[in-house]
Image (cartoon, rainbow, N blue to C red; front, side):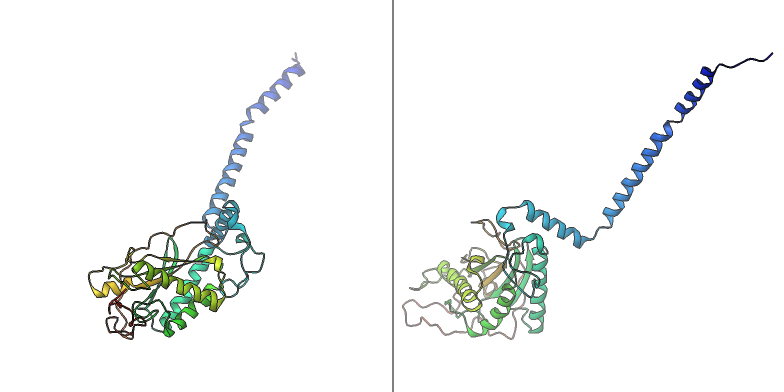
Length: 292
């Protein structure tokens, strides 16, 4: 005798078997998500550092102060593709421009054997170009640019003119006091020397005055000891600082200089302790031979 199985039970058995296999759908979804996750991790691990820097610079410019997004000046050379109307988002990171300028200056310094009178360093405040004052930029106790200094300044100015960065010129002296009618103290002398460089960049090279600033620090920021003449000669200097920004906030104060070990003085330069002509010798209280 045959037994008939109701159709309802047969259908119920099929549904139960399908329900037991539903875990495969969840498992397949999890495997797919894991695969996508590891593909994303791999793509992030092989990202180009150059592309990452450019993307980071664009984000900083986009979400930074409004002034940082204004149009940059026309240029050629370091940034040959800068055109009127270009903004920070259209240009490489300004840090890359600083490094390129540093490389070009170091090539010029090495080619002309100027390692002991010009030094470059990439610090947190920007690219710092240090020029010794003794027998290079200015006469002793004065702030008038000497002719030999113009050749070097012309080379530096040619690079500055092609960059959108702001520029700060700092004047520094040693701790030896000075007292003349024109320069009652080292503060006036250091500021006058910084201003002399700024005026030259504006008058001779037509660099936008809005990009420039001059500061005198006297002997308040030495890079070497003032206990001996060798150290004082390194402290008598002018620093050209190329800031890593096209338009810093008004009133922004540059960071203090980083202490750098002094290099050996070049034998090609006259001894800083040798007597030098003084344009103010006819005035009372002329500067000393080792004046700042």
